[in-house]
Each structure stands twice: as structure tokens, then as C-alpha cells.
Length: 395
Image (cartoon, rainbow, N blue to C red; front, side, top):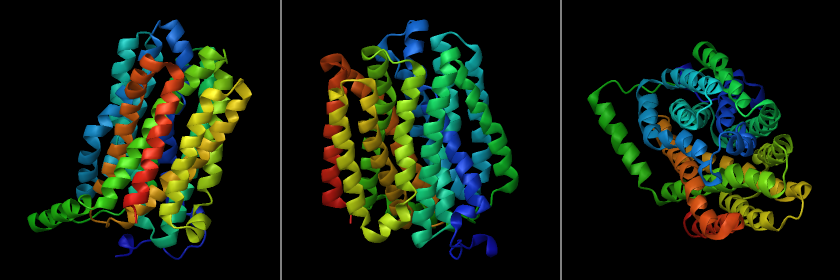
């Protein structure tokens, strides 16, 4: 069937309308954390929240994905991608928009939890659809362009979130409402492959295939290094990076947002070159280089003497993320099939959410014991450990 053919012939895949819709989903996933992080210092002050507890706004948002992503991946494999994507986008918009009207931190945490349920499948199903529609070098290029879209969104939303937070800490919550038109676009315009698993025999074959894939050492290693990336992103970068700038250097939210957005400018530039990078270097070498850059950037952050020099480690972090995530997604896309790709990618999403959920509390413990600088040094050690795992396991 024509609907089940991967797109292999188009040389300019960035012009494909399906990829544009995927970009919109990807941009939505960037709203939940990055638009809010610049407002953290204001939330701490105005809602009288202890600094070590502010990371709960990320933890309760990411936690639902740990439990729900495999279920959502299973449903997407059985019934189709769009039947999971559309209601998820709508829930994300409604719960996020409701945060606009509360001034109570506990209620805010509850609403963030429901918003997290909505966002849970988005970060895995967007790359699932890319894996469905493209193969080979086109897949690597599409993953790179998609990461660029995410990076541009994260950079833009960090800056916009910082500007909105200048008017009030709650104004960044107007941004999740953008998911409503995205959901309508997915419903009526996205081409999506729907595997046919309508009988018990096909379902049993599906479960066997998933089990066999998950047992592969390379896939387990890829999930593990994904957890490390998002401990770094959600803990060191999204939580303690803005706190260091706001509390230690007294930087206003808008400046924090600008510096944080530079991470994703660098990520967008590097990930947009993934097709060329993969042609010149093996995936394993690219992934090792990414974690080396993470380690270096995290060591530099505590040594920065003034606000503007934070751009240096920020650009290194962005480059690391820009080359690491598309490489991971491309590897997983190649190690899965159309029939089980949604659940394989959903476990990647689970690893992503697990890292995001663990990052703030784990580094919060380090922060309590050894100060904010210790949080960055601990993250650097994790990056080096991931570097060693890649060297030993990834082919």
C-alpha cells in the first residue's frame, strides 16, 4: 500500500508537509520545561518556595511519562499514531492553560502533573512517525532537522518565557494553549502509518518482536545514556543553571532566558548538519564526542566569573545535545521495525522522562550536601560514565 511506503526519494525532505507537522509536535514538547525555567527565581520569591523544591515543577511534569510512555507506545502500535497524539495534545493545552489562574504552589503541581500526562507520548511518537516515513540517510537527516526544530523551539520559548515572566511568573503558561491548533493539524493533515495487528497471532508476534529487541545490549545502553542526558538537561541545566544566574549573579529572568536559549541555538545549528556528520563519522564516535562536550561544559559552569561568560558553556551544552540526541534516535530507528517502533521509541521516551524526573531531586541532594557547584561537577562525572559505556557497548 502507498500509505505504508517510506519516503526515500525526496532529496529535500525538509520541504515535506508531514515533517512540518512533526516539527509542530516537537515544538510543543519544548514548551513544558523551557518556557517556565526562566521564571523559577520569581516563583521561588513570590510563592515563597524553598529553592531546593522548585525542581518539583519539572519532576511532577515528567513523572507520568515514566509509567505511561510504554502504554502509549503499545496503543500507538495497535491503533495508530494519531489516535494517541491528538488527545494528548489537547490535555497538554488544557492543563497547561489552567496553570495561568492558580496562585497556589500545590495546585500548580497538580496541574503540572496532568499536563505531564498530556505531553508523555509526544517526544517519542514524533520520532516514531519519522522512523515510519523515512529510512537510511533520509531518516538521519529527518532526525537532525527534527532536533533542530526542538532546539529552535526551546531557544525561542526560553527567551519568550523569560520575557513573559517579567510581567508575572504565571504568564509563560499561556504558551501551552498553542497545542490546540497543533492537535487539529495532526488530526486532519498528518500522514501516519498504522500497523495492522488485528488478530491474536499478529499480537503475539508483536510481543515477541518487542521482547527480542528490548533485550539487545545496544538498546539497553542507548536507553541508559539517554537517562544521563536528561538528568543533565533537567537537573543541571533547567533547574540549577537559572538558579545560579538568578541568585548568585542577580540576573533578571529575561537575561536568564537569553543565555539559556543560546544552548538551543547551538543545538539547532549542530543537529541541522547531522546528515553530513553521519556521512563522515560513525555514530559511536559522534555519541562519544557529545558526552565529552557535556562533561567539559559542566566543569566550566561553576568557574564562570560573570553572567555573559555563561554563553561559553551554554554553547558547548547545545552542541553536545545537537549531535547526541539525533544519533540516539537514528540508532533506535534502525534497531526497530514499523510494527514495534512506537513502543521501542516509547521506552526511549521513558528513559528521557526518567532522566528528567530524577535530575532535579538527585542533584537537589548534591546541592544540599555540597552546594550548587557540586551539582554541576556530579553531572560532569555522569557524562564521563556515559562516555565509557558508549565506548564499551555501542557498535
